[in-house]
Image 1 (cartoon, helix red, strand yellow):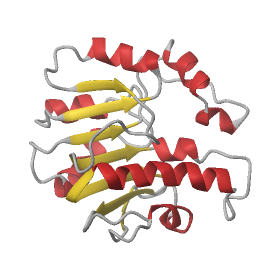
Image 2: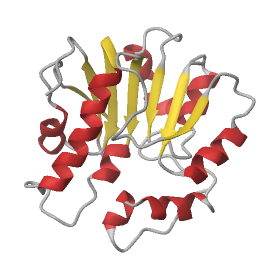
Image 3: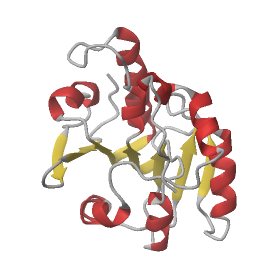
Image 4: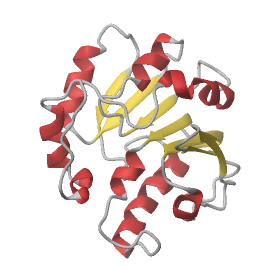
Length: 208
């Protein structure tokens, strides 16, 4: 089911109540790209199907389901929407071992150095929906995104990877992703309209 209603106020994408209402009537929606589109890049960067994978802001995307069915059975999905976590837990009950947890990506309740891979497909974009100047984002937006990225750094093992899929171009996104512990690398997807696949490998335990 495609959710056709676009909020008049783009900042709605940052609000939990918007998503609770949306997920109450929407079964599935994939932002940007499907697993089939992303599989070449994901398989390149996730070299072991035994990797412990954290999916940030999982929503009702089929990405985790498709990855599980392709052999990635150690996936932890989090979202701040109680509704979508309940719905996806029921929907995926036969996918043994896959977890669905209600949690804020800015305050992860996981041990440090506990994941091999962290994936964000469009979640950071929702945090960045704002009416302000994209060239000069306000301090609250910068702080909110920094909380997400700093938590990713914390929970990733050394040698672990952060994979971020977005339509956000490097001159708008790299500033938010840069940390002393990694180098931000970028790949592109698509022809007429490009999506961006940012990939970072944690080299040490330094957090900015």
